[in-house]
Amino acid sequence: MKKQVPIRTYTPWDEQAPGFLEIDTVAHCGTSTQGEYICTLNTTDIATGWTEPWAVLGKTQREVFGALEEIRGKLPFPLLGIDFDNGPEFLNDHLIRYCQAERINFTRCRAYHKNDQAHIEQKNWTVVRQFVGYDRFESPAALVQMRKVYELLRLYVNLYQPVMKLIGKEREGSKLRKHYDMAKTPFRRGAEAGSIAGEKRAELERLMAGNGPLSLRRRLDAELDKLWRLRAAGQTGAAIG
Image (cartoon, rainbow, N blue to C red; front, side):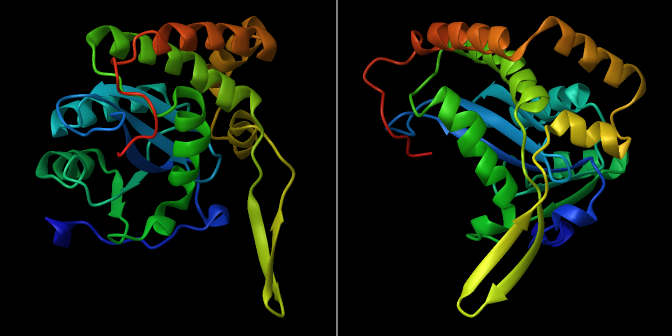
């Protein structure tokens, strides 16, 4: 199976059109990986930083594939490629055949090299862990509520949270200096690139007009409070997965 999926060690931010995603799963298992628990399929676009999380119960091939299709429908630009780790939820015949049929580029990182997926690893922390946390969630009610959270979180992150883009590096002796461009929201980056246009852009602009950042954050915090009340008993704290 691995021989069918080429290895990608990195993708420079300035050499990709919008639509190439790094994807990963984040486990909401609390302190134990026993039993069935909720996971987040998290995806981020390398060029714009556009991030789409979605919650699934477990991380079977079927559940993860369904989440990927859900996310594909939410993206404001075409899905052109995905890059994933070597987990069986991604490295399977069903997903490979789907990508081939849909003409979606697919690559994988090297095993045990998290830096190969630096973009999604960062978003796993800033989008998933910093908002949802490390507690265990396992009930159908928690799954529904986490999806409600993500419906708001995707708007908050992509429409209102600026991100900086690495544009260059230079070494001065033993120090490596990194240079970044002006911080812009993922929506603005996509619009300026021409990848968010037409009906998709109009829809997002309507959402921005009806959801200011402060009111959106208040709604998000309220939904997060409801989610945290659905934590599994005795399973709080740092996660294993």
